Image 1 (tube, each protein chain N blue to C red):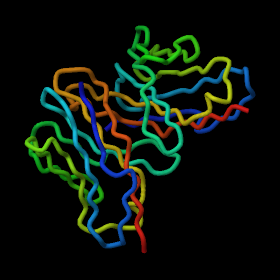
Image 2 (cartoon, one colour):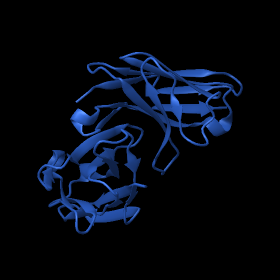
Image 3 (cartoon, helix red, strand yellow):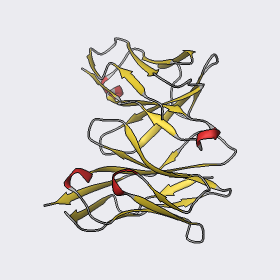
Image 4 (spheres, chains in turn yellow, cyan):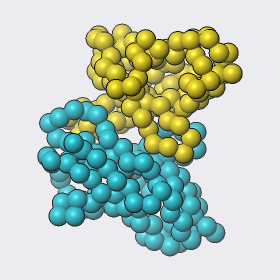
Length: 117
Length: 114
């Protein structure tokens, strides 16, 4: 399967600042990537679908101007949390889609813990 | 619309006992089904997947699951629990020929007692 990395693994920032999270597919051409957030003791909530070379598709209720997604290459997607507030504190996980040939299997990154003070 | 129901948010077993984590799905078209495991502060790791081949699927770490269309179920089992199996388990569904999105269940936390 694909190896997916995320950077940073954790970040602490002040309220009002912006934070960028990188998701890299190390050995797989990632046409489609996904961004999730996970609150403590809860399941994953899909935020958006990131397609290489085009605009991301956001799920209902996710503010696209607050959570900026860029997928400029087949190996890198970034999520920028703009003007972060404490309620944005969460665990953010990205995944790479293996596509129909892989039965839509997704390969997950290790996650990024964001804490906004 | 697709959905996944995991019965039991918490399951506790003794070391060496059978592990059974339940997953039922709803899908109007043939599904692809997955079980993922998540350890604290980590991403998700695939345990096994069903993609319309054999209905009994064997995965990593001694886990297996059986796709039962008549029961719309994909329960995860392991004959003998190890302490290292303690984690959160997620069942997920997508469907053939459609969106690549996965629909996740709410998860089941497995505790293994010594």
